[in-house]
Every structure is written in C-alpha cells, then in structure tokens.
Amino acid sequence: MKPDLFEAPDYYNLDDLLTEEHKLVRSAARDWVKRDVSPIIEEAAQKAEFPKEIIKGLAEIGAFGPYIPEEYGGAGLDQISYGLIMQEIERGDSGVRSTASVQSSLVMYPIFKFGSEAQRKTYLPKLASGEFMGCFGLTEPDHGSNPGGMVTNFKDKGDHYLLNGAKMWISNAPFADIAVVWAKDESGRIHGLIVERGMEGFSTPTTHNKWSLRASATGELIFDNVKVPKENLLPNKSGLGAPLMCLDSARFGIAWGAIGAAMDCYDTALRYAKEREQFGKPIGSFQLQQKKLAEMITEITKAQLLAWRLGSLRNEGKATSAQISMAKRNNVEMALKIAREARQILGGMGITGEYSIMRHMMNLESVVTYEGTHDIHLLITGMDVTGLNAFK
Image 1 (tube, rainbow, N blue to C red):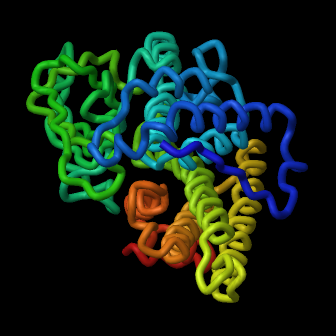
Image 2 (image 1 turned 120 degrees about the vertical axis):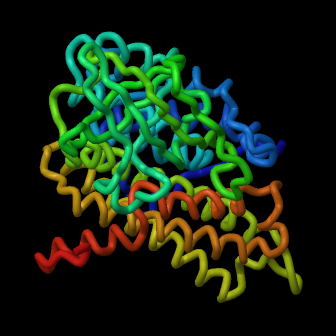
C-alpha cells in the first residue's frame, strides 16, 4: 500500500476563516483517514465489503452526531465542524462518509429533534459511541423523488402499532441495530418510528452487485406485520417536513463531503502530472494538463466558499432548504467532473485500484443521485427563484 501523501488545497486561504477548534477537528479526522482508512479502503471496495473495524474510529473522531449536545453523547460542535469532518471522511471514501452522515443526520438528528427525552437518553449515547448503528427508511421501491407517495404504513392496534411495507437503497441497513422509519398512519399522515433489529417480521436483506459505494453496506428494510411499541413513535413532529429536515442536514454534509472527494482526485492528478514524463518532460508542463488542473482548483475553491458560507448560515439558523439544495447539487457535480478530468490525466493508470480516482468517480455516481437527485435539486432552486412549482 502506497503512503497517503494527500495535501489539501487552500487556494484562497480559507483556513483564515476557520477557528482553531475547526482546524483541530479537521486534523483529527484527516489523520485518522490517513492512518485507518487509506490503507484498507481499496481492498474493501474491491471486495464490496464495509470495513466494520472503522466504526470505533469514526466514533472517536466525533463523526457520529458531532453537533448533538454532549449530554446525549455528541461532541457539541458547530455546523462547520460537522462539514469539515464529512469532507475529510469523504476524501477517504464516499461510502464511509455515507455511514457517518446517515448515523448523524438521518438517525441521531431526528431522535434529537423529534424524539422524546426518554428516546434521546436511550438511543443517542449508544449511537454516538458506535455501540448502536442506525439507518433511515424513507425511499421505497416505487417512491424515490416523491417520498410523499410512500405506501409503508402502520395501524393502531391498541397497545402497539402494526407496521407493513418496504424501503430500499438504505445505507447501513444490513448491520443497523435500529432504523428510523417513515410511514403513514391510518389517516395518511407521515410519522417516524424507531424499529429495532430483532422485532419479529423485520428483515434487512443486503443489496448486491453495486458498481458504486462498494465499501458501504446497502440494503432493504422489510416490514411484515412488525409490532412496534407505541413509545417508539417520534412524538414531536409529523408530516413529510420531518424527514425532509433530516435530509437537509444530510445534504449539508454531502456538500462538504463531495469537496473531499474532489480534493483527493485533484491532489492525485497534480502529483502524477509533476512526476509522469512524456516527450522528455513532466506532463504537467503541457498546456492541456495545466488547463485541467487550473479548472479543478478553481472549481474546488468556489465549492469551498459555497460550503463555508452555507455552514455560517446554518450556525446562525438562517440556511434555507433551497440554499442547501444548491450546494449539494453544485458540489457533487463539481466533484464528478474533477474525478473524470483527473482520471484522464492519469491515463490508463487512472482506472486501476492503485489510485483512488476511479473509486471516487464510481462512488460519486451514487452521491449525485441520493439525498435528492441532481435534477430534483435543480428544480428546487428553480422553484425558489421563480415561485413556480415544476413538480405539479
């Protein structure tokens, strides 16, 4: 295994905008990725296996619920710190970042925001430490971009709820201890329920044959007359707005994470362009290669500024869902383009597992689709600026 020589680009001196705490948090995550992720991630991706041994390390760097208050086991950090952690983890691998952002934004966040105090105390400390792993059940086989059309439902049976339905494309599902599941009650209102592994009728078959996010565990959630205790209903918010608030948090993390993938591809291509010689000189001395690299660092810098400003707005409680959509869409598209250009700089070597670029490229094909597709986020921005709804 080659040593991880990654050096993060900071063309506009954005570190000047970060606090010392931000830099310490980022350094801890970066050092952990170099030590514990980079040496094993290519083999994990080739084998299509999630490396469960990294869960403890993710917890130790505060990747699980970094913005959750310390009284519930979180690190009590701000939103920029959360973003920086996601950036560093996705620099290692998008699938590992998926594991962390699902745990944080799609499991711990709804329990913290919408759960009872008893639910917070029961689940959040164990999720923060990695003792429990969670997943988020919203997407269904026939309802992706239109989650409000879900058919998963529960009925009130007096002393419990009876849950039926199915969810798919669920990160962490194969090994999750709990699932935050969104389902309709008998009136059609959407609620969140905490479903625990071991409940009769609850199964989590693994999704196989993925070309993307191969080092991430993906599966389905199947509910066949699952008896869910009434105290497992999230009591403090219902309606589609509840899971969409969770997705806002996850999309924010993705906007930062995609920068990490782009930075890794850029750093790899820059290093290669300086070392690889053709026609008697490094390929980095040719105009077309310099054009590629100059455009990469320009787009990364723009994405960094977008993410930093969005993080500042999130810290102030001012960021809108549409602003988060813009950052997610822009930054993932940016990362995909950079991965493809970086692959060209490496030529044939770019498709091998000796370098990270092809793995990033394949992973980003999922990231551009999940948590709202590229086109859906474009329409969210369009609706925001025109006031006209293209979804109906």
